[in-house]
Each structure stands twice: as structure tokens, then as C-alpha cells.
Image (cartoon, rainbow, N blue to C red; front, side, top):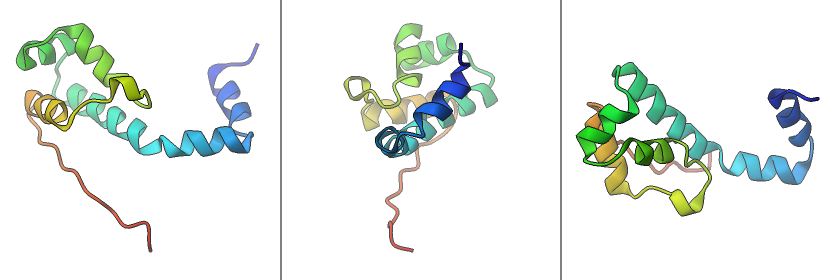
Length: 98
């Protein structure tokens, strides 16, 4: 049986899978940064939920929603999340031209 990392490595050998995976890189990075910032703030999902006036399950879905269009958070939600962990949201548009 393959480990998760071995399975991912094997799947990424397929060019079409790699292309789709790479297309989601920024979304995954955003959600990873959200979790990292929450942990650095020393807060649980439940505490964030209380600060945002929602439930812990909603925060769990928010943090796990990378790549799932039906759970894509609004900018307002991202701003509220950032405020709840004592941060602010910084959005940039970056040119693909070097």
C-alpha cells in the first residue's frame, strides 16, 4: 500500500494531474497561511468561530476549502477571519510577466 506522499508523487507524474494541481497552488497556500496565522495567534477554531459569530464547523470548512468551488469564501468572510485572529487581509494582483 502506498503512503499518502507516495501516492501524490505518483499522481503528479501524470501531466494533466500536475497541471490541475499546480493551478490550485495559490488557493492551497492561502488556506495554509490562514491555519498558520490562527495557530500563531494561539487560537482554536472554536475561538475563531466565537469571534466571528459562527460555529466551529464553519471554520473547519473554511480552512479546508482549498480547491472546492462550492466552499470558496467571500472576501468579506476572509476579512472577518483575519480580524478574528488579529490580522488583516492583504490581496495583491501580481503580473505573470517577469
